[in-house]
Amino acid sequence: MKRYQLIDQKLFIENRKRFTVQLKPKSLAIFHSNEELPRNGDSTYNFKQNSDMFWLTGIDQEECTVVMFPDCPVEAYREALFVKRTNEHIAVWDGHKYTKEEAIAASGIKNVFWYDEFDGLMRAVINMAEYVYLNTNENDRASNTVKYKDLNFALQMRERFPLHKYERSAPIMQRLRSLKSPLEVEYMKHAINISNKMYNRVLKFVKPGVKEYEIEAEVIHEFIRNGAAGHSFTPIVAAGKNACVLHYIDNADTCKDGDLLLLDTGADYGNYISDMTRTFPINGKFTARQKEVYNAVLCVMNEAKKMLKPGVLLMEYHNEVCKVMEKELLDLKLLSLDEIKNQNPAWPAFKKYYMHGTSHFLGLDVHDVGMRYEPMQAGMMFSCEPGIYIPQEGIGIRLENEILITETGCIDLMEHIPIEADHIEELMNSK
Image 1 (tube, rainbow, N blue to C red):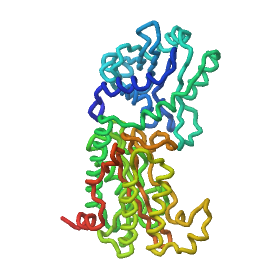
Image 2 (cartoon, helix red, strand yellow):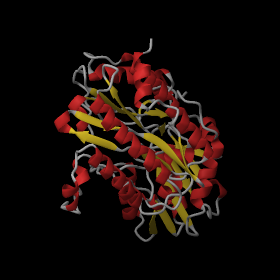
Image 3 (spheres, one colour):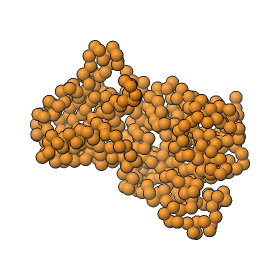
Image 4 (cartoon, rainbow, N blue to C red):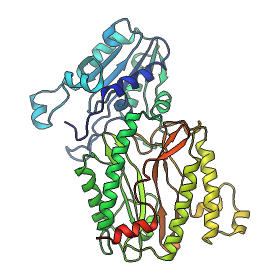
């Protein structure tokens, strides 16, 4: 049993059709679930499903594999799912695992076998294929040096079956996963609504003297009580100058009177994520300078949203957003015209106060896959998250909403979540 409402199998049936139509004739494709990762001693980290495996099958469990071979002469192997064989010992110690019937209901795949049967059946099937599509992590933000299931399997396959022609699944999956179906958007909206509840809870809780980790506890409390699996990424709860550290995750400092709090969090609901950032005054009242900088960031966000539409290239969009940011930094007297005139083109002057990108893909992963050098399309989901960081003033402000690209522009899926400075003050000071 999962915390989230199970997704209609029609989504995964359609996803597999979208994938297999991209394959060359006589092709076989294989995807694996993630492995359980060791932590310390005999413990493991909480299991998180491989996003490609989930997108194709809806199966949310370790030790599972899906094989797609549309041209296979044996009907049972044209689409086959392998799930972990359970037993009484596993049931007692680890709990329920998918039955074959449950795996069929979740995935829509009619041919389900046990995972320990995969190797034997694979030997009988693979020689009927000319091309073999294998999956690896090609997210261009990834810097993981640890070997993982898909990578190990790819190495083994090339050694065992050296004369087959191997192809990459990742480019196909990146393009497909970046286009969200209406059902996927609804699940992401659910995760967003959980974030909204969390935010309103935190606004009532924050005050001078509380610890950042106490706020983190309020965040996870609201996530879990609303059916989320937990955080979609390690939360950033950064008070005062800590907000100038972009990936601050210590969350151990004290919230001081007069400082701002930057809260960058997201809920994981049914493997779909939310990603939201808000910055607000710890004592419930912005100073004049804080509000001036805050409104500058909000202005950049509002202008950036107007640029998100089909046909736009992500890098060109970011360059245009930075022109807006440059003007705001001039108005804030953080930059001068001379600094801009004499700037190093490889590191423009604005980067002293705004050093990260404005948008990234969203979906099953918080930094989701997508082709960043290809034009935006309707159905894509992006963050929009400008920020200004002034360490010398102890001010770090970032605002972030989730944006859905449509045929005519975009929709801000978080526009109902308070963001205007006056509204935030009103909520923090109301009983």
